Structure formats: structure tokens, C-alpha cells
Length: 142
Image 1 (cartoon, rainbow, N blue to C red):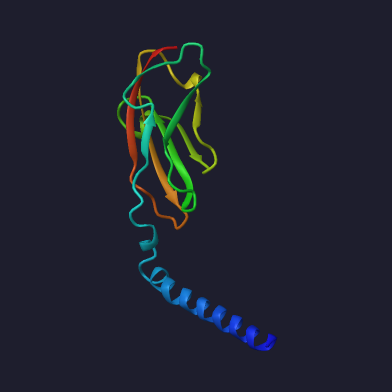
Image 2 (cartoon, rainbow, N blue to C red):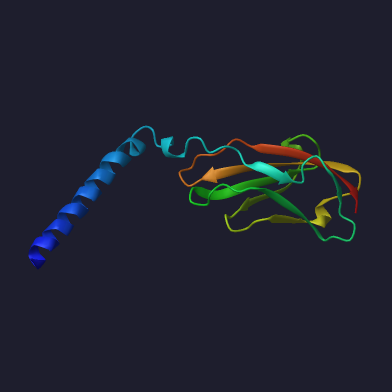
């Protein structure tokens, strides 16, 4: 009886293993990004087009709707000292690990009455990337 049960478990395990290989095959040949298609750019929550008051604060907190961490390798954060995303205006760049949320930037990077923009892009475990999310804000007090 024990041998018969062992054979059933072995047969079921082998079936599941082969079935899994069959269903994963399309992802390993030619269409490797198919498993991650449909993951959109992150939705930015704060700061987004608001006037930011940093008076008495030593950092500014950036928040967004997080993508499930299973597929996220890191999140690419960039901060620009203008409303544009030109590389010449880049003042801060960081690859954020999935557990580092919300993300905080020291207040020393900001000046009063200056407009800033920030972008966020998710880099996936398979090497793919989402589109960039983009927003601007103005520091009104520091």
C-alpha cells in the first residue's frame, strides 16, 4: 500500500513538473517579456503639481502606488531642477529597492520658488522597464 501511494505521488509530481515546463516554454523562447506585459508605469501620488512647503522639514517624501514586488527588480527615481527632464537639469538619481518606500530626499536639494520635476520607472526582474511616470511641483517655502 505504501509503495502504491509513493508511486502515485511520484507520478503526480512528474506530471506537474512537465506541465509547468510546457506552459513556461513560450516565455523562454523569443517572447521572454510576455510574462510581464501589461505592467504600467507607476501612479505618482505625492508631490504632484502642488506647492510644497519644506519650512522646518529636513526631507521631502515621494510616494506612488507600488507595483507588486514579485516582479520588481528596482525603481528608478530621478529628480530634475526644472519642469523639463533634460539630463543637464538632473540633480538626484537613485535606484530604489522594493522595500524602500516611501522614498525621501534631503531638503538640501531644494530651493525656495524653484520648480522641480521627478520621474519614476520600474525595472522588472526580467530586464524590462515600464514607461516613465512624470510630475512637477514647486517649493514655495523652505
